[in-house]
Amino acid sequence: MSTDQVPTRREIARHAGETSAYGGVRSVVLGDGVERGIRVLEFRTGGGLCFEVLVDRAMDIGVAELDGVSVGWRSRTGFRHPGLHENADEEGLSWLRSMSGLLVTGGLDHTLFGGDVDATHYAYPPKQTVRHGLHGRVANIPARLIGYGEDWVAEDRCVLWAEGEITQATNFGEHLVLRRRIEADLGGTEIRLTDMVTNAGFDRTPHMFLYHVNVGWPFLAEGTRFVADIEETLWRSDSVAEQGVDHLVFDQPLPGFVEQVYEHRLTADEAGRHRVGLVNDALGRSFEVDVDAEAFPCFFEWLNLREGGWAVGLEPSTHHVAGDAAAREDGSMIWLEHGEQRRYETVFRFGRTR
Image (cartoon, rainbow, N blue to C red; front, side, top):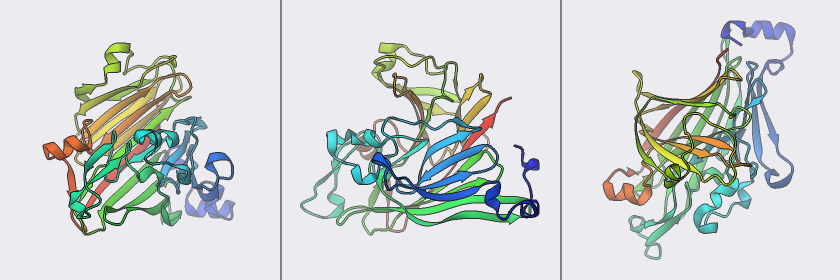
């Protein structure tokens, strides 16, 4: 639906008792299985876009649909309650047991593969090192919900919104706070994500940040195309040469497929943005991730084309694929002093190509 078709505030009021008759935000709690107890905010824009914000999963985005077609990946894990998460289990790979949905956030002090890194900067003698798991802790931390609702900012424009704070903290360690605001326009087809990460502690603290943006079936289908302005591919996992599976146009799910990962150097547009996406020509639908190239200078393409878990991941990142230890060694690690902040402004854009 184009913006000129969206009813005004007065038009909605003449026909219905509240804005939610057309679109809005509703708070629910999931009640069964591993998802039991998860607070969810359901967004309906009235423009064909519906998505869910998982309040108890760092306000990440779970279900995401355009015109009833699922875009966000629905993995076998479901939207698992963070109380079931074992951060150090399976040598740090237990993050994979709660990986599902359109957006799973990595950080706040670590992303990429895990391992031991120096922790002497925290000046706590029993803690000489800290062990991280895959993509850090933040995705399994519940948010403090600040608010949500529908705000008419003009007679012809209503913004659906939610805001919360996620605190990753320990004694004698990091105290990082992620303040996340999610917006969508009534009648619109895009999600605007604004993240602010602050070092609320008084110790110099590392900061790494990554969005694991996951697209699945039925939007992901045979013939779906990956679209990006790639300047150079900096790195490929060994599985790329071993399997030889195309990373630009996708085929059917494959038995026993081993994940393929690429790090691409992207060319920023005139506005200083990296824009990458997927296009399904058969459905006439597209999906785009639009990020600040300075905030997220690195980008990974993740292919999980295995039967039963078919997905493609678009991953803007603050750091290169070599990860935490390498960033400390080469000087690219971000260190935040007390009160220092990093801001990330991102758009997830759902489109119709015909």
